[in-house]
Image 1 (cartoon, rainbow, N blue to C red):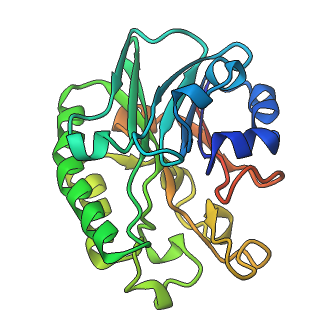
Image 2 (cartoon, helix red, strand yellow):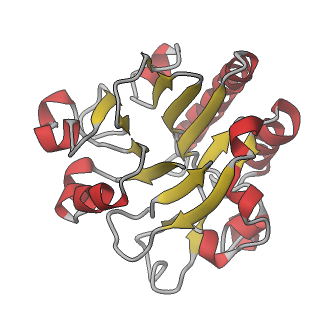
Length: 257
């Protein structure tokens, strides 16, 4: 079995204080993809860089306290790619790819557009650039698992209050259509949905810090494993870990044969 975890940390230092690395070591996953490090290279302690038995590869944002992603693995990758080749978004620290034999594991943090119209425009730019990159990945013919915070709830069952969010970033018609194109036209697989096609409230991975969203489970499913068909077909179990809170997101764990 290969266990892969995706976790938006909303700050690696904050998540570490809340016990993330102790939990990660207990889970003993093969790969752990993390997003929103909110840290630069000088902020990274030995615990963050090489937690028990892991090596880490990271893409830091140029802006302090912002974005940043990483991939932890048990073994050193055969190849590592930092960024996906676009200067605007590579400056924001959004993409790490690690190759292991015929498998690639990618950690991605797609932009959020909720803070301003300008950021929503940036999110649309990212989507336009990332779509052909995803097509090129598929064309490589490798098995790939892209883990991360995609900042889009795909369907109505993927968020609690879908009716009132249809004009809000993360559930806009254009964003949802973009996700559909990945799955229906390019052939990527939403691995959690392959295993749990009907699940609603238990599927959420993010809760706003406003109001009583966590207490009332007013959540969104915006963290995914998006995989090529071959490895997606080997997915055996998926779980969202909510027993401890490391950030405003919950880790998504999927085991593959």
